[in-house]
Image (cartoon, rainbow, N blue to C red; front, side):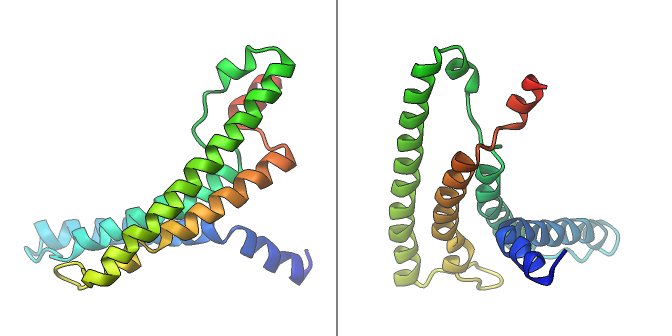
Length: 166
């Protein structure tokens, strides 16, 4: 594999890399917290704040990858029972709805982040600004739209559809 294609592959899957690293941090800290709490009687008082931030980042970082691989939540069974021509119409309608919902969520996330910026609100123990914790949301919504259209144009099918077709 060429160096350029390796870099392209990493950049195209940066969301998966971020989600994986954050998941590893979450697992390590959670497991480390158990002996510190129950054996050493020295609990990490800040652990809950870090776990919250990690979970938010994992969900939002991995959402684009789910769209890109066709593994987002979808009820395909109903659409698959329709005639082929009607399936195409419904798929276009679904695409419009998906983009509209993600656009709305993107718009709302800016207002949400603005509240955190104006208030300067941060977590109680570690003083992590909530803007940092939830700042991934708008980026994620944009990546979800891009990934959705990538999957649509590349003809990516969900694992369930692929399994049925084999």
